[in-house]
Length: 86
Image (cartoon, rainbow, N blue to C red; front, side, top):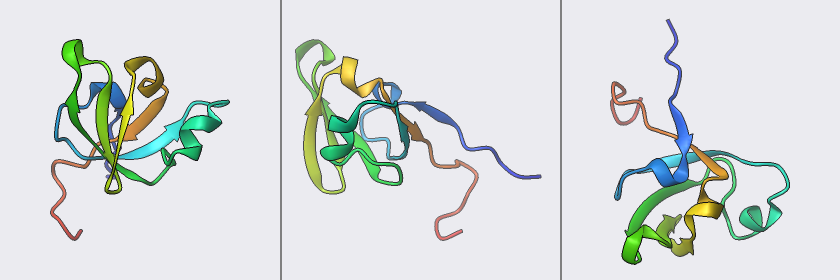
């Protein structure tokens, strides 16, 4: 039986939770151009007062995005049952 990976919008990730970008909504090439591409690892870091904007660690580069933009980025959460190296 195959496990189905859980996918969520980027703003839903808790601080420090790593994930992999699954897709970016159509027509948002500016997000792709700054590195939010499918397959890239991403991790939420700190955020401004009120939670917006939020800083994301995108393959070692810190990028700040407003929640309105980040909601168009969908990420896959790591499988909690998988062991590292599997």
